[in-house]
Image 1 (cartoon, rainbow, N blue to C red):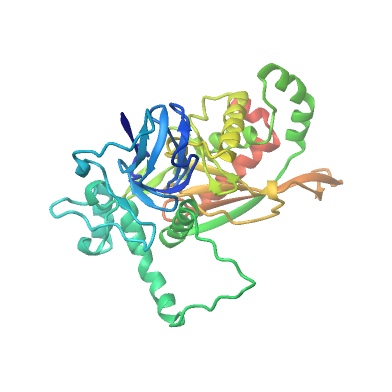
Image 2: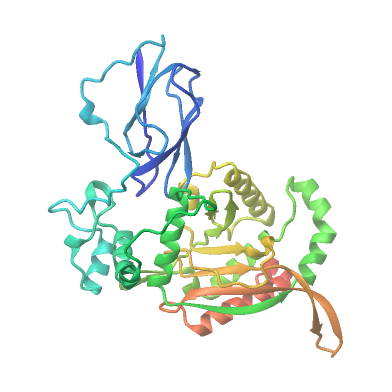
Length: 402
């Protein structure tokens, strides 16, 4: 009996993936639910388990191929025999060759763009027929319109590029970008092209937080089974400040502002394949220990490539810690469709003039908030960051909701 291996559902708005690698070769035995093939989507890598025990007798789509959701990947046979041919191959989505890349098909005739996409098309006087749709059945999504808006800005650069290809150099190595890296590049460039992005800076004295951690780190870990890190303080401080300045927790959808009355905080995590941003859900109702546990688990699973698309979707605000790599100051880029992001940096001893005039060496950290000026005014952004600073320099404010 032959069993088909197909591409599973990959999450909302994700319709295709690239085959990163097969864990088994044709002729090898496999156990039911054993990881069989790794797929790479725009957001995460996904392992497809074997649907049944048997022998892998056929691989239809090799590593590097791009496949649609539902596409046939191969066959498993319980007895190791040749695969049984399906009588209705049309039901299985076709496998697309890895190269050359093919743009998404235009929206099907009569299928209107998504509502949010329709607004952007009207506002920018675009021709919907010229936009390729990546949604279900070729429907135009908001992301498709944003990418279409970004293209004209790049046209002059393309025209100025040299006509002949760049010559190869034996000292160089060419490696094709992964889907994740390409998606990161697209999203960051889209954010720069669509948002009126500004950054405001401040600095925070980390003395109080260092004292709390030094005093309670052992008892905290013993009681909760997780270390008391810095991120829980920053997540909780951001939540407190977002409640005071709701525009920083909002987003623009067409000609409307969507205010979020919940606090799902994305925490940027670096992995060998690129930056991913899993989301700490309902951070306002979580304890410090619960926040630390969620972040620690996300960190482990991010390094192993085990995060799901759902775990990286729907954040309302993002915190990025470049300080772990030694960054002293930077201007983080907004994670669309969010309207702001907080950048943390390296803690460094610096001379500080105290209120009584004394000068002391204090552990100081520069903070940066990049924000979309279309929705957030300078007063709101600066006040938001000052509130974060106050909560971090006096952590009791977080506990007492002051």
